Structure formats: structure tokens, C-alpha cells
Image 1 (cartoon, rainbow, N blue to C red):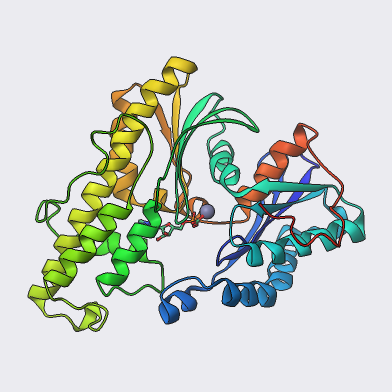
Image 2 (cartoon, rainbow, N blue to C red; image 1 turned 90 degrees about the vertical axis):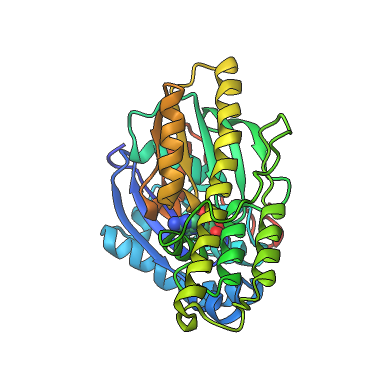
Length: 353
Ligand code: KG4
Ligand code: ZN
């Protein structure tokens, strides 16, 4: 493994990321170029604009990752790239880059599922993590509960029926007039520290539904309605312009939203743990994806795991949000199992999920 070097490329959403990981799990480099200004300026990710951002950044990000790792393109063992799910215009930028590298240097190609990357990176950061394990993936686009049996073998226990939790965080942060330049989720988490999490009583979604699926759209809408009824008009007033009383209300809303959003995660995980235990001898709960960098999420799920006698593993925040390391590492896992392919033909525009 010490002479296996995998380049990972990730461009599924708004971050252009690349990393080189060695076969034994040593991270040799990691580079992320983010397009946070787009969020501040437009309040969301627009595929066409994000695509242009990726196209501008990709060559530099990849050569920087190789440079930091001290590896030449031709010295790579394979190139791993996110092929989906994600914004297809954006995915294509990474896929094209990977294709040209693998073609020129006759390298093996490893197409990676973005969510598998989020799940498996936990095996890099926690070498004691053994299959089978339960994994909760919480990001801007996905909410998944998976029983991971081995590399490439996952049973889906739950998914979101509408919005993912990260999307609810981002939209709520925007309604509250928060600064989105470093992401809505982190801004809301910070504001919530100043608030009373029981100030507003939002109901916990799907309490009466006996499965492991998620729903965040209802909560998102109830928060939105509350904000407009308070007449805060945060889309006009930035939080920095709010007076003390106004700021307190917003903090209370943020804290109350977060309490209920996390309770919903706990409810579904609680049931999923029992279910997974009935199918496989799991010993660990993995929590990964952007929202797993949230301290309240980590803390509450740690308690839940302990209650069930499970270990918990959360990758460090920089590896929870989108990054190239998780793609490179998933490439390593596939490479070790011989799951490599020749690069796909150049004239195949729709090769994304
Ligand atoms: O995994 P990720 O980087 O991208 C996707 O695959 O979607 O997740 C991004 C999501 C965003 O919605 C962001 O607001 C959320 O993760 N996020 C957080 C925190 N950090 C990132 N949500 C809540 N609290 C945080 N600290
Ligand atoms: Zn992600």
C-alpha cells in the first residue's frame, strides 16, 4: 500500500477539491477551492455559475494537490473522481479532468459515488472502524441511513422524503439574515449558541411514522412562517443591523430549529440502530457529511450511540464537508479490491448519475 498513490477529484457541488492519498491512508495533500461568494451573492448554488467556477479552478487545484504531494501525474496509481450524485454540469468538469489525466498517462480510472466517499472516509480517520457499521450521512443534498456491510455493499435503511437537513439549515440561515459566506449551517450553529432552544415549540417531524426516513420540508416551512409572522423581515435586514431584542428572537428561532432538527436525526437513528442490529453485528455508528461538523449533532448522536453500546466515529469537520480526500480514499479502497476501470470514452457526455 505504501507505493499506491491515488488522486481524488471532487466537483459535485460548489467546491473544487483534489487530494492525493497513499494506499496506507496517509494524506499527502488536500486542496479545496470554494465558491462561497456565490452563496452570499445569489443565496444559493447555481449550476451554470458553479460550472464556470470549477472550470476556472480545476487545473490549478489538481496541480497544487500533486505538487504538495510531491508526485508527478505519471507517478499516480489511479485517478478517482466523483461521478455522482451531484450537479451534472459540475460533475462533468471533474470527470473531464480525470479522463484527460487517465488517457494521457494510461492510468486506471475509479468512478466514485459521492455518498460512498462521505461514508468511507471514516475508515481513513478511524482505522479501528470495522464492517459492518451503521452510517448516518447528513449533507446539503442528502440524508441517508445505511448499513455498510463491506466496500460497495450498502443497505439503505432510510432517506429523505423531501429536503436534506443541510438544505433546511441553509434556508433557515438565510431567512434569519445570517452571513452565508462561510455556509449557512455553521452560521446558524453559532447564532443558536445565544438562543433558548425551547423558546419556540416546533413539532418533531414524522414522530408517528415507524420507519427510518427523514423529512425536513415541514420544519423548514414552519420556521419560515414563524419568521414572517414575527415581522423580522431578515431578507431585508442583515443580522448585524438587528437590535438586541431582534437578535435574541433570531437566536431563539435558530436554537429551537436546531433542537428539533437534531431530535429528528436522533429519532430515526435510534430506530435504525435497532434495525441494523437485527441484521448485522454492528459495533459503530458513523456520522459524516457536512452537517456532521455541527457540534450539537455530534454530541447528541454520541449520547445516542453510547445508549446503544456503540462506538461513534465522526471524521474531523474538514473531512465531513465535501473534499478530495474522501474521493481519493474511496479510490484506495476500490483499488485494493481491484475495482478499477479504463477511462470512459471521450465522446460520452452523459456519464454522470
Ligand atoms: O457534505 P457537504 O459539504 O455538501 C453536500 O454534499 O451537500 O454538506 C454541505 C452542507 C450545507 O448545507 C452546510 O450548511 C452544512 O452541510 N453544514 C452544516 C455545518 N457545516 C456544514 N450544517 C450545520 N452545522 C454546521 N456546523
Ligand atoms: Zn457532500
